[in-house]
Amino acid sequence: MKMDFMGVHHIMTDRITLNYEVSAEDFTRAGEASSDVKKKLKQMGVEPSTITKVAIAMYEGEINMVIHAQGGQINVVISPDEVLMKLADRGPGINDIEKAMEAGFSTAPDNIRALGFGAGMGLPNMKKYSDEMQIETEIGKGTTVTMKVFLS
Ligand SMILES: Nc1ncnc2c1ncn2[C@@H]1O[C@H](COP(=O)(O)OP(=O)(O)O)[C@@H](O)[C@H]1O
Ligand SMILES: [Mg+2]
View 1 (tube, rainbow, N blue to C red):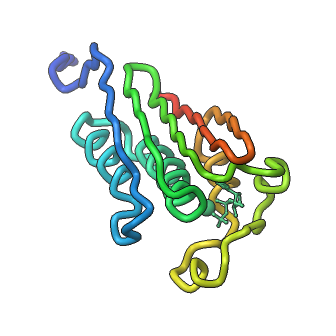
View 2 (view 1 turned 180 degrees about the horizontal axis):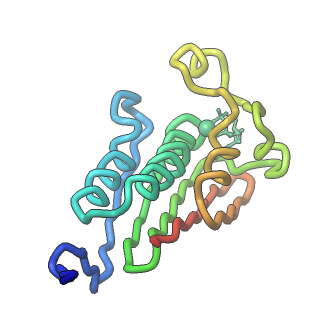
View 3 (view 1 turned 180 degrees about the vertical axis):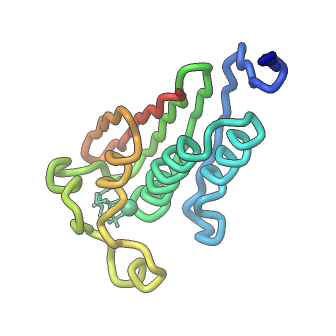
């Protein structure tokens, strides 16, 4: 007889909200918010391939806040259907979003490139690994990137 073990299925009933302050002062801390979300999704039993998508998309957005925008705030809402990430900064804004989305395009200066950043693959990978992505930006005011990864 085939048995069903209801107990092994993780049932998420509540939504979980996580808020992070991203500092641009300390490069050694860049990526802390995305690794914390990754850890929490793992504890919740989310599928590894889904965790990878969230981790890559959020890490790239977080790094952009650090290297291009003096940091900012990240708000993550994990609900039964999706992981919603909102990354808001008060940086310089993005002049030409289409250009910024091109693989290899980067305005990162030499000192940032010397640290290993500035390959120009962040935004293309955020687009690739998220299921939905939206950029709102205003020159001199800041940028908000909203990404969603669906949980299957
Ligand atoms: N949050 C942001 N604020 C201002 N500019 C940004 C932001 N994110 C991305 N950009 C601009 O878009 C370009 C491309 O971003 P990305 O693909 O992540 O490449 P990289 O970060 O390696 O330069 C950046 O070089 C920068 O000019
Ligand atoms: Mg980047």
